[in-house]
View: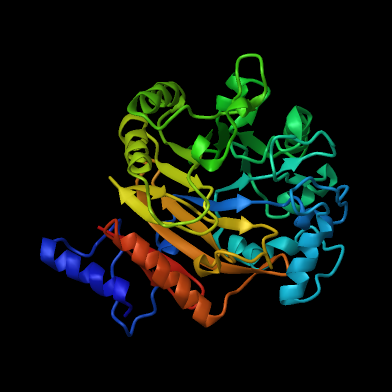
Length: 409
């Protein structure tokens, strides 16, 4: 039994609460624990992850790479990021096939069988050369490489982030058109503010709907001029995280939400590094749950996974961490282990939006591919997630040698 479970049991004993949470129980050591997701057949299962950054170096190893010229202060060719990764972990076969980058994640998606798959797509999908000149980093994936996204049968791409306009308004237009042609639903950016504010809607044929709203914040580095308006393309950028902003969103969401809808607020917020959760983020997340009927907060922008909170039986992921990127071999911030990625599989009751279970599957980025982590790295990320969950009365423990589970009260 790990320290997280000991703390969880202790809390339950002190408060007089039982161990039952959403129909689950702790099993004796001699029993083989069954996945919580296998115990909730009538729930809606989601796949959520952090930033999917298939531009720049990853784009260069795919079948149709963009022009490698980039306009960063110190790097002028995207192929350099490929060389850095190869110097650390060995040669990357080039070109890779469309499913290569997902690696072991594809088998986990097949096992979990989520009803809806949501990613934060943090790159422009374009062949445009019109880069945003006042910005230091520019992510671009060639439109012909969009099969690397559809290979994982993704349903929704959140675009409210600080890279979707890296290659200008034409780059955003190309991104939207490419996603449409690939039957991928965008949210969080659009040709005007109405389109940027419109949720992606996944109708689950009798089980209910999943609505994903994409929001971006200045704290994640989204320029003010990227905000969409009535007659200008851009991002659904929030002016602040005030109670007034939360109420405006509540008014909008409540006009759209129907019975048995699961509402996901996907928010690009906060700095890249550090585990602290700002008070304003927590207040805002709680307000969206209290006032707007949001069922899941899908936070991203941090380069490493952050705390998980269950508030009023609703899931808050404050920072999902990077999922796919070309940072391999770049030095700095190694103590945060940004190479370790998490697949989040929440199961939600469509009747009331309450969280039934949350499984998490750690993976590691090596050679631009998601691989199983070592046993040592698995324990490291388990302990780190458990430490952060404990701050919100939760505990993270190993379900088996591949998967983690959240316990809460």
